[in-house]
Structure formats: C-alpha cells, structure tokens
Length: 377
Ligand code: PLP
Image (tube, rainbow, N blue to C red):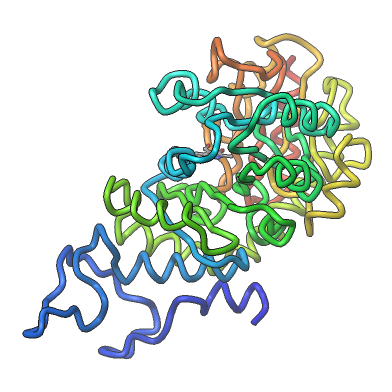
C-alpha cells in the first residue's frame, strides 16, 4: 500500500460488531476477564492498551515504515520518555542541534531528568564540529530536528546517523515539522522518529499527543513500552481517535501547506521590508540541496526576519488579520509568532524573527494579509 492508502487503512478495519466504517471511540477503562483468566481480545485496562491507541500506533508504524510505535499524552511526554529509557550502559550525554523546539531546552535545563544529562549543542550543518563533539566524550543520544523550529535549519539525517553510529550513540529525529509524508528518518538510518502528533498529524489544533516510532526491536523500545503504561502519561482514547481521523487527510493537507508556503516564501523574499526568509524550498536556503534530497517537499513552516527590531516584528504579528497570533504549528489556520518574546531568556531566536505556520487558507488572502501588515512598519 502507498502512503495515502496506509494513512486511511493501516490499523483500522470495519467494526466487526456493528459494521461501522469509522472506528468507534472506546471509552471503557477496563475489559472483561474470561473464566480461564485470559483477556480474549487482548485488552485488560486502558492505560496498558486500548483499541483506539493500538489502531493509531499501528497506523503511525506503517507510515514511518518502522517496527513499532509507542504513543504518549503529548509530544513532550514522548520526548521525556525517550530520554529516560536510555539504557544504563549508554553514557548520559546528549548532543543537540543549536536550533530546536524550545520546550526540549526547558526540559533539559529545568527538570531533574534534564539535569541528569550532560548537554552539548552543535551546529549540525557542520559535520566536523559534530564529529569532534562526539569523539571528545562518550555520547548516549544524538538529537536531530529537521527542519528545525524556529530557525528552519536543515540537518543531513543520513550523515549524522553515520557519525552517531560510529560512536555507539542512539539517534532520535524529531520529525514533527516534516511529518512522515515528507521525510522518513528511519529509512535514513535513525533509531527513532518522534512526533508531536499535536501538530500536522492531528492537523486541526484540537488534540495533544506524542509518538515515538522505533526502527527495530530493542531493549530501549521494550523499556519505552513499559514506561508508557507504568508511568501512565498515555493519550486518551478520544485524542487517539481524533489523531486517526486527522492522519487520513495528512498527505492531502501537506501538499497545500507546502504549496502555500512556497508561494509565501517567494513573496516575502522579494519584499523590501524583509531582511531574510528561512524556508528550505528557497534555493538560497543553506540546507536547500539536502532538503531536496531527503524530503519529498519543503513543508509548511518558515520564519522571516523583518528589516527592523523586535517591536517592528511584534507590530506585524499584531496587525495581521487572517493569520492568528498564536503558538503551535501544523493546523488548518495560519499562525504567526514572535518566538523571542515567547521563549524569553533562553531564546536563541533573533529579535526580529517571526515564525509562520502556513495553513490551508487561500494563499492570495494570506499574502494580502502579510502585505498590509508589512506596509504598516
Ligand atoms: N517537537 C516540536 C518540533 C514541537 O514544535 C513541539 C511543540 O511545539 C513539540 C515537539 C512538543 O509537542 P507537544 O506540544 O505535543 O508536547
């Protein structure tokens, strides 16, 4: 089956009891035990497993072409889980990209889990710098986020995996911004592909969910499964159902996100009030050729720097009428956000940078909206 077909059929079947084509939402927390003590349908208690979660995990495994998937109550719960289950024989050192989702930095800087790790940030574009960092000290995890959020940097997954593998480190790719439609990290050698399903996979800004898809069976995967039900940061059946509904249109939505984003990136790159546009679909982007090779299209996320300071950038975010000034990405609505003021002291985002999550509106309306806001500064 090809991607679009798997997105609709993998993990799902017509309900054998009612004939319902859409998977029912199973709200029961507990399942009947047979006289011989077994659970005939394989479900015992919904924190351990339930039909909606199982369907979603099977579907995401198929879309990432992995071995298995473990879901969590949010992207951040998935991220903390994968860090926590690093086997004891691996050094607790993590190498991070110098631009990445800010919540991971907060986790690492402000929680006991984070404090148990030795952290080094590198420019992943610079493979020599990465090799030196990996060779200078034993490393447990090499973390990749590509395209990164919010500066939209591109990392060569296959090359980074080679360096990490030589050092015996596990590679985790946060594939949230690319989605499995555009990029399959496991096929490029990564050990785990991670998603904030909250974003493009859910697709409608109405659920919180995280997922880790593993390339192969491993003690780390088994620990992840145990962590899921033992620690209990599991997604609700309803959120799994919403994610399964969303994923059916993922491929169709991504093609509009990508085509709208391309037109907007071109418009912004020619605008006199814009200093720089960060979008891997532009040939001028430093990661363009790598993105063209490892991705099927360039995504719906971009950022741009205005000619001006933080108050000019904030004024644009306050003046747009169709874009919503809001955090998050990957929904049907277009969002604009001044990351530096959201991230505050820990931010690495330039003060004049605005991040855009391009939605599914008519692109002409989006351009007119940005144009009128830019003309005000
Ligand atoms: N990874 C990326 C790239 C993100 O942008 C986010 C959230 O913005 C997360 C992970 C965390 O996901 P969640 O908000 O579902 O916890």
